[in-house]
Structure formats: structure tokens, C-alpha cells
Amino acid sequence: MKVLGIESSCDETGVALYDTERGLLGHAVHTQVAMHEAYGGVVPELASRDHIRRLIPLLERVLAEAACTRHDIDAIAYTAGPGLAGALLVGASFAEALAMALDVPALPVHHLEGHLLSPLLADDAPTFPFIALLVSGGHTQLMRVARVGDYQLLGESLDDAAGEAFDKTAKLLGLGYPGGPALAQLAEQGTIYPKAGRFKLPRPMINSGDLSFSFSGLKTAVLTAARAKEMTEADKADLAAEFQEAVTEVLAAKSVAACRQHRLSSLVVAGGVGANRRLRQRLDEAMAKIGGRVFYPELELCTDNGAMIAFAGSQRLLQGEVPVSARGAFAVRPRWPLDQLS
Ligand code: KG4
Ligand code: ZN
Image 1 (cartoon, rainbow, N blue to C red):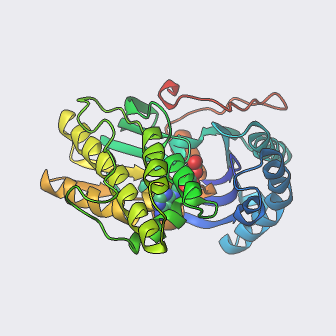
Image 2 (image 1 turned 45 degrees about the horizontal axis):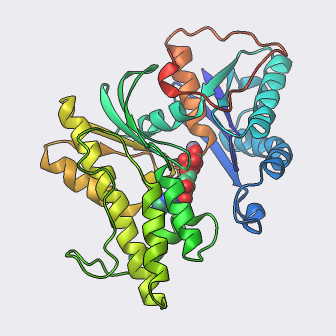
Image 3 (image 1 turned 45 degrees about the vertical axis):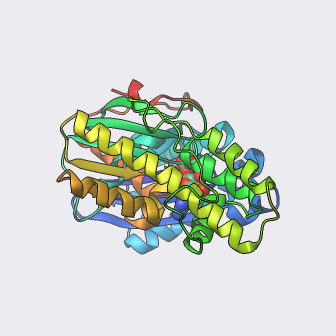
């Protein structure tokens, strides 16, 4: 069965063709980063309009890469939420219209379920059950994943998501958009001061005894530290490094705590912040200590893409889910809690 995946929830347009027998046949992503850069963040209306322009060329590229035609498509999975309403509507209407024209089923997919299952696309995939750490621009969550569709929320951020904290802190330090990768790059040049010294930031909620997170205080702490002195480039790099240490230490500690509490040895990491090298290093070390291991999606599948949506849709179809025929009556859900899926 060949499933076409369509992703358009934010600032990346992703299209992919996944074959349940042969794996990923083709995938292509267009990122709108350059377009939004001038505004310092995503402009929703511009995002929607750009998705419209990109979808058909991306579809053609993916079909060519897969050496398939439209008529080889057996089903279409698309991101129906959470995300930007207008951007979601573009992908949803494109997918539903194409499905109607080809007379194949269309399946709405939860964006975070796509991220969550994306490590299963790798050759060395984890088996159920596992703990998942979802770290994206909009979410920081720990989940217990029993099987496809069975997600138990164990803890989440009470305020900013980890990616959001990276982005906002990058902005404070005068780095461009998107801030996460830029801040991570700067942090690599910085020095970490293990003992109390300059730029020692808090590790929010690390001893809270639960699996909740809070990252909004960190950016304020960064702002206070940055205002306290004239910042040289080296100072900025050190502050970025300390910020990255603070976020990754908390994420690693809580992920390990979740695995211990649920007696599980597999941790899956998904979402854009999962691309962070320091986070990977820390998680690998911490999980090895408890005899467990960490599974990551391929680096290019960490951020938003169509492959994860095609894959999540295919798994639901394999499980026997019957797509509800929308036939013009589809809806998107800009807000959509993952643990409400069944
Ligand atoms: O999953 P994603 O592509 O989009 C959402 O669904 O949110 O995640 C994007 C987030 C952004 O906040 C971005 O700054 C962050 O992931 N990010 C990173 C890195 N690469 C992307 N944060 C830290 N280090 C990175 N290397
Ligand atoms: Zn995402």
C-alpha cells in the first residue's frame, strides 16, 4: 500500500510517498525560513499562501523520485492539526481534493503522532512500549506509547516549549530566525562552567518530583545575565552554552525519570529540538547508565516533513482504521491534545 503524506501545519511544506512493503519511496520538504526571516518569526498568512504554491511541485518531485504516478497512490494522509489554521486548511483541502479525484481514501493525521512515530521509519527502530520525549517549537511532552494510537501524557511544559525557549533566547542574543539551530551553533563555541561561576542559569523544576517542565523563566534569566554586563562575542557564546546545558540537563533528567517510573528501557526522541547534538549526547549517556537506549528519527526527519505523516497514516490504515470520507466536509484542529487520540 502506497500512502502519500502531506504536511503543512507551520512553516514547512512536506510531501512524501511511503510504501508499507518497501519503505519510504520519496520525500521532499520546502522550508519557508528565508521568507519569514525578515519578520523574525512565522507570519501565518504568508505561510498559508506559500504552502499553496509549493504543494504541486513537491508532489511532482516526490512522484518522480519514487518512479510512480498519481495513480499508484492508494491513500492520502495529511496533517489535520495541531498547527496554524490557514496553513492546515491548505494541506487538508489539497489532500481531500486529490483523494476525491483519485478515488482513494484521505486520512487526517495528528502532527505530533507523526513526530512520535518517526523513529520507527529508521532501519534500527524501537519496539513498543516506549517512552517518548516530544520536543518541538510548540510542545515539550513526555508520553508513554503502548502502541499506535495509545498515548499516555506523563508530563509537559507548563509554559514555553523547549524549542520556543531556544527561539526566544536566540532572539534575545540577537541571533536570527529560526533561533534553535543558531543558538545551538553558537553554544558549541562557548565554554561550560560546571561549578557556580559566570552565567550560571537555573535548572527549572529539576527537583519538582514530577514530569512537568517550565522554560519561560530561563529566557528571563538569560536577559538578566546579558544586561548585567557588556557582552562580547565570547560572552554570548558562553551564555548560549550555559542555556543549552540548562535545557538539556532538565530534559535528560526527566526523560530518565519517566523511563524508570514506567520500567521501560527505550526512549524515543522526536521533534525539532531532537536535532540538538548536546541533547542527544546527554540522553545517550543518561540512558546508558540505566541500561537503556535512545532512538532518534533520521536527522532530516526530526523537523517537520511529509514522511512522518505518510508513515503515521499508513500505520493507522494497517491497524484497520477506516478513513471517514470527508467529501468536502473536513475540518482541521488548530488545537488538538495528543492523548485524546484513540
Ligand atoms: O518539530 P519542529 O520542526 O516544528 C514544530 O512542530 O514546532 O520543531 C521546530 C523547533 C524550533 O523551535 C527550532 O528552533 C527547534 O525545533 N530546533 C532546535 C534545533 N533544531 C531545531 N533547537 C535546538 N537545537 C537544534 N539543533
Ligand atoms: Zn513539528
